Length: 404
Image (cartoon, rainbow, N blue to C red; front, top):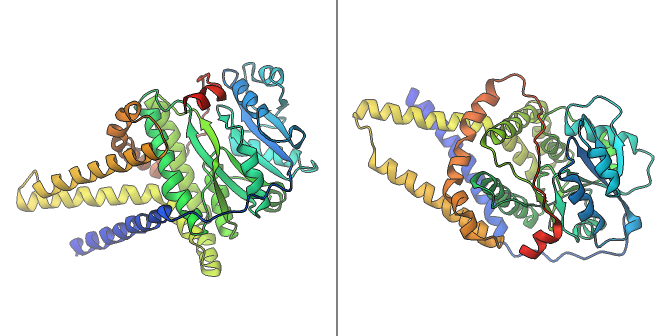
């Protein structure tokens, strides 16, 4: 009976992996030609939630002022919250609208909620959301304007890294986002499904976000908004030429804390919206409802699947008295080699230095494996607080473009 249960669980997780494996193949399809609709120049309000970001906020504002877009069609707003340094003064010095958050907030989602309400009567077409440590490609708004003109109410840009060469941790984050950009967001784009919002460099139409009365209740406001879009059958565009360069963590302890928040936030989204996602799929038959149902449950699925593998290994070891299974070791080696090949492909595809990424290519499997204990904690820890991550990578946009 126990063996049947294990086999049934294993079958489910095999189908889970097969689902993502099959859907990722669509990324290789020939792209559909889209209309470059630049006739209307939409007005954008750029929103940057900032807390103790004096070291990096200036470079972001400078990059935004260099946009190849009509200067009277966008504004730069830095929303200062819980800050104890000179973020406010630096933001003003570099020419942004520095706005102090006038209500208590504990997370980025609450800051966005505050400013969406504050700007309710502003005459703008859409918001663009960035993190304070970003720098942005000069053509970002040009491409987002086309997406908005083509009928999309929500769009995610391409999330790149400005410090992928620092160490294997920042490089692994970079590989993680490259894989998400290509095998998830681009694949969904190719089949007219919905991409996912991943934290920064995204656009949302003002009228749409006000209609939703967006009030995030989880630790991951980006995942929550993606989930809400799926429930409402609203397709999220992936704009691969709208590039944001993000600062990735280089400290392993910081990485653990950040990814714990991600895992817990996803589980919170599943708990809050799983019934709505099922109803949304039954009503509209949209793939994004399945995506978000499974994505939000990923922490649970990983923990159970790996636990089943460990139990199966122990059971066979007890019954056969064989500690090392040659076939199993070969399977692990092939799996590891496959991961290296895929990450090598995505590195070359994104025209990054392979030599600089060698430590990350070798250790990316370890980066993913460390999600297992993180996910265990996320399942059993009742409360995970949103914690600020410090940034200090002082890189200008023109330095990144020159080195690309």
